[in-house]
Length: 181
Image 1 (tube, one colour):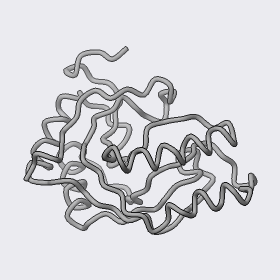
Image 2 (cartoon, rainbow, N blue to C red; image 1 turned 180 degrees about the vertical axis):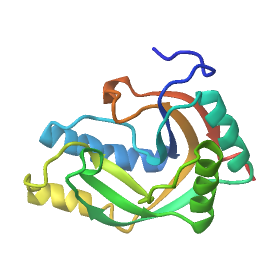
Image 3 (cartoon, rainbow, N blue to C red; image 1 turned 120 degrees about the vertical axis):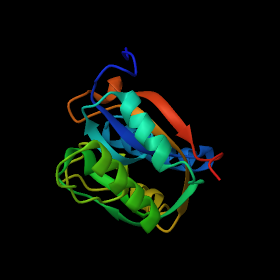
Image 4 (cartoon, rainbow, N blue to C red; image 1 turned 30 degrees about the vertical axis):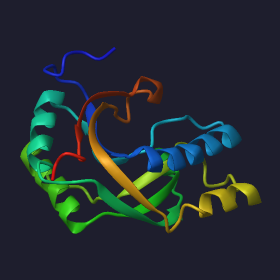
């Protein structure tokens, strides 16, 4: 169970898809989960993860950074796979330079260290080894997502981190991007 937003706990900043985009992405996540027994999770783009501050601090910085941002469109450029547990199967997405700049601004405000490289993506499966091959149906299903434009209409502060079990990830607060403009 989540503690108060004013207490420090590990959390992340997610860009969350609107209902239509979430339905399409969640279908892919569920397809892979059912086929390969990988965990289910909500579709998202992690803007920053494993933040050690109070969620309230992060929410305040995000409200300022996203004050004038409306819904964000992102095109899925291609399907990728890596050995990284949290990037084992994912769609690379192209975000606007403005959104990337806002992410950098949040990072600079919250952290006093060098900003790590940012590879915007929507994960479709966690922990699927590269050695696992997709069958024809799975390839076809997932390949349909490449080239799609997804709309993200919310920024969420989520109790999530690499050391927190996925089953314990929990939205703590959010900012609607529908009312920002």
